[in-house]
Length: 200
Image 1 (cartoon, rainbow, N blue to C red):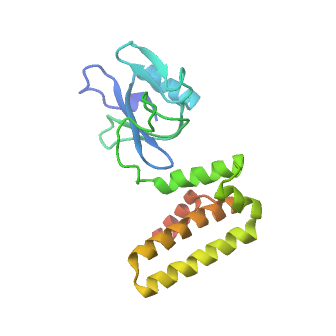
Image 2: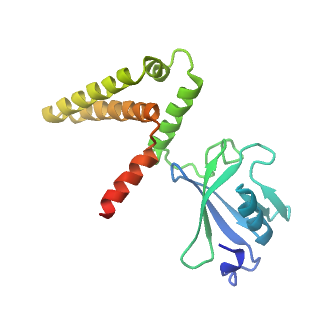
Image 3: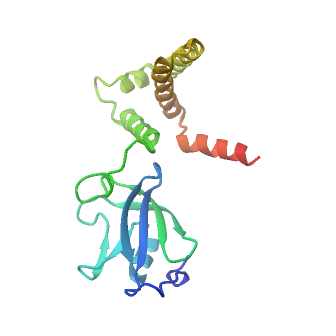
């Protein structure tokens, strides 16, 4: 992909609008603009760099705050006049200290946020954390908890108690995320497997 591939003939300032999306949760994080130099620097460094219209200069997101945006994928839209960048954010994206510049509901992609929390607990192992406790007990105990929660989910489904079913299914999903982490497996791995099956 090259900057010259984009059609900016309708843009008076000849700047390319860029939408930033969290590569894990798919949450839309922010909107910025690039000129050719900013685009080239982004491609070269894999760190999102914009052109500031107010300062009329380049700025790499995170250069002062440390909250960088690490590029994962870049996509042109169907009219070749907008760029979508899927990135891994390092800290909050918005200057307010929030994850995104829009205060949308945080339920979308929450499983990925919870997965990240489980991964962080596995690294830091904070005292008093139930997740840390499970990792301390090891694979057999984690697998046992997944089995217990699966049985309890089935029981509530067969009794028709929807509220209790939601509680138990939520417990099951959480413990499955812990088991995934113990096994070195991610939600993206599971998604990829399901996508490949769906294509068949």
